[in-house]
Image (spheres, rainbow, N blue to C red):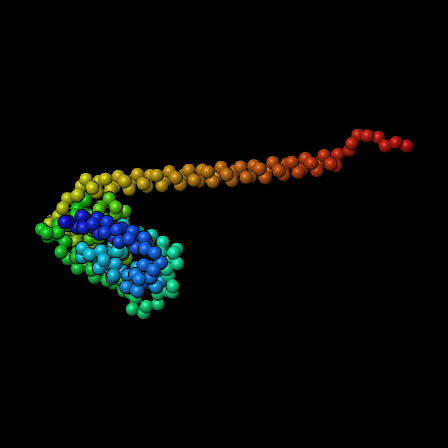
Length: 245
């Protein structure tokens, strides 16, 4: 089973686990809370959930794989709707955003250090540069078509950004083993271009519609003003009848 197949298998296993959980009655959900799988605030304990999914799943896997992340979010919403959350999670040992970011960085850099070898060639786009979107697809173990963009921390975390730049240089210099993905990257660029064109078109149409609406509102105001003025002039005009002696 390759990484992409493993990613799909994890999604199927998680969906099966979630379906089973959501079928439980209140007592069953309470027992799952006692077991630690569901926390008191209605969220899944990621460690317990990773163990249940198996296949080398880690807590970080749920953050990296979009399909897994969405499935968990939807399930947790449904659990809260059933009133399972009894209190807020104030566990002082829970990881902070900073800690999660640092963990993501360490894990990714460790994995990246092996990219460019015979076992893990560096994905290259049709420009002969490092194909970062495919790189993220490999690391997060999800199909390339499901990856819309690379994570923001590819650029925001200095060590990650520098490591990617250094690998890109090695790709250009031909000092690492590469995997050409011309067809995928060309398709990617075409999709991005079509999306950008559609966004531009929608913006233009939205502006035209807004301008038209504003013009109609202004015309209506002017018509109402003229109507008021005409009514006022009519009320003040002489009737033409002569007064009787």
